[in-house]
Image 1 (cartoon, one colour):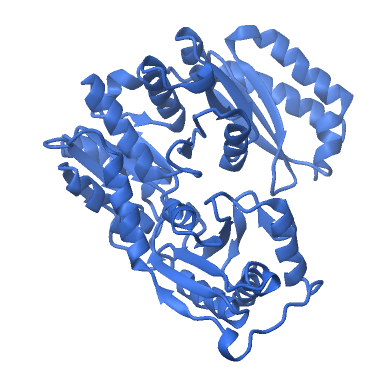
Image 2 (image 1 turned 120 degrees about the horizontal axis):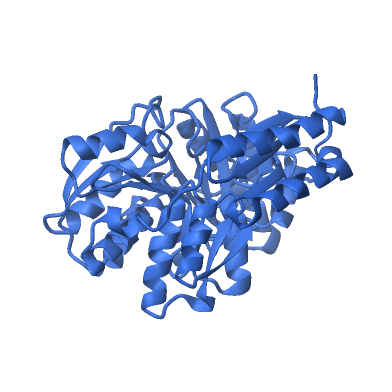
Amino acid sequence: MGKYFGTDGFRGEANKNLNYEHAIKIGRFLGWYYGARIDKKAKVVIGKDTRRSSYMFEYALCTGLMASGADAYIMHVTTTPSVSYIARVDDFDCGIMISASHNPFYDNGIKLLNSHGEKMDEETILLVEDYIDGKIEVPMAERDKIGRTVDYVAGRNRYIGYLISMSKYSFKDVKVGLDCANGAAWSIAKAVFDALGAKTYVMNADPDGYNINTDCGSTHIEHLQQFVKENRLDIGFAYDGDADRCLCVDEQGNVVTGDHILYIYGKYMKERGKLINNKVVTTVMSNFGLYKALDAIGIEYEKTKVGDKYVYENMVKTGNRIGGEQSGHIIFSKYATTGDGILTSLKLMEVMLAKEKPMSELAAPVVFYPQVLKNVRVKSKPEAQNDPDVQAAVASVADALGDSGRILVRESGTEPVIRVMVEAGTKEICEKYVDQVIDVIRAKGHLTE
């Protein structure tokens, strides 16, 4: 991670940590880097979510791009995966998504995507940061070299058509609930499900610039659970602000997490001979119950660091075809280069209709182990993590748990925090072993007072 950009873009509170001047500079650099630097006119596609500050950042990015000679194609309110798709198929030099995902409305972020719709490489990100800090000079475009903006709502419509084409089945008479989080999915998800014949019931699809993610969407799944039960729906899907993640609710009102989705679709792929390498890619935060369920059906798995970026990197390197996070970032590498919430919901519908089974039955084999996660603030993350006594305490817990649970101790990527997590047969056991490790961290003087 760089000075400004983390694993999911440059993110912060609008006009505090992230302001319009940052956006102008990002546009200025990208317009020159992909354009005048190599004696061409750059084409950049931009999307945004529904938060109020997204309009400010959209105009600022366009200003910077045009000042450097690039043409900015504006998709308006749309999802992150739609920008990724259009950047890839419509021959753009790069893509930009303005969103802070599941964060509250007053936060925002700028995500950069390459011409393949993948997250921008670290080398280019570091050059962007050097320009923001004044270490690189970029010339202004002049006269006929100045860029323009292009209304590109057609790109969003093309993406909607792509999603519709993904379904192998009609959704006729299936009662589907959609929680659009008052975010980017509000103008896309219902159109897709309606076109496929579903009886679509929508909630939180009335964005006002301030209500994105507020008590709704995938981070507040309890409202969709109630909605599904009250309306006696067959299934429900909840998205986050930029719709790159999806969680599901079965017909009984139970939550189907990203781990369940990996199991359900991984098994479906294996049954059809489509699970290349016989592997599913997870992060270290997937529940122990997922691994037990995969073991039972003979599917192998790989574990990456937390972040869909690392999941995708593994998939590119190994050729594995499905991976994701418990939070609902699921990547189907045959169809997308990033997590796509609406695509994920279509793939779950495919399994349910193909197997003619309710979602509750499909998800039942994944039995979650109780989990306790505690964060402790430390003076130095590496010193605390690498302390021999701390490592010995972690090893002792791992030995005690055996194959009946697991312990994970990792550093936060953004805070001076060590996360201690244990999964085991009961919550009491989890609490006991988490506290056991934290006691050693405290005794060794690593905690901040």
